[in-house]
Image (tube, rainbow, N blue to C red; front, top):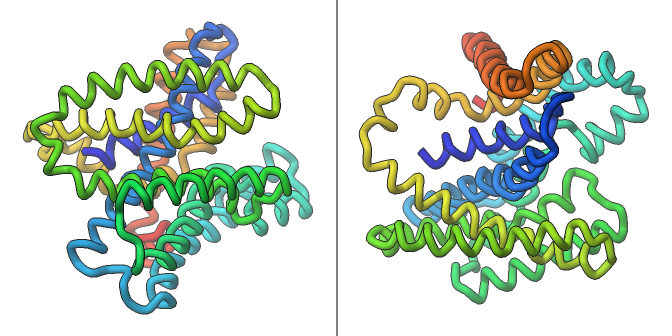
Length: 326
């Protein structure tokens, strides 16, 4: 349930960011900003949750670093290369007239590889936690240490204008990945308190978001630095509330037995790999031709359907499955 919800939030965030209907009310951009602090963090949190679950329950990620690294590369870097070569780069060449220099900068060095930036970022985050994982005990002290390390690392990368292979982005999401481990440990302790937690976190996230939004509009150097310190805190508050809500709904069998939910859960990763270009296509086709609400809904649904069709076709071939991390 959490994985499906995080996937839909990721697509929803990309959808609001990329689709800009001509008639849309400006206040809708606030929704896009809110999703911007939730959608990718939710997916990163789920990845961290699974990482620490496998580590604690099955002893994974405690063995040979090289073997684990190769496994992560097969899962993340092989799809990055394949989808870049056969989907994203051709699309960028046709739509944005991307030249050789742009291909090297955006994709080979990983500075701006469309939606595939997430794969590079997550690979770097995995590498970090594989290195420190053997000696890392999840506690308030370790969470704070990773938090300050990641924010300072992110600010240094911004100062140096360095984001090759999404290193700066990886710093940004490290504490959120670790928070997935916290939720994995606390899941049984919080079972009876989910409703109270959601209410408290809901009000807290509203207050922190107002501060975050105001600082973002300020534009001063101090405000920009504070935004970077606030982003992980705001994201953690929001995704924890959503995680608790998902856990409350998980008790209903509908979520386990529903065919649509299961299909999305089983194919969420490859759908993500292809969705952004479909959003561009349907944005161009629909923008200004239909009401903006209809445009948003159609773009969201059609991008999922088309990406799912591509996924089903590729999964029928062994090379296709390998290309999408399967």
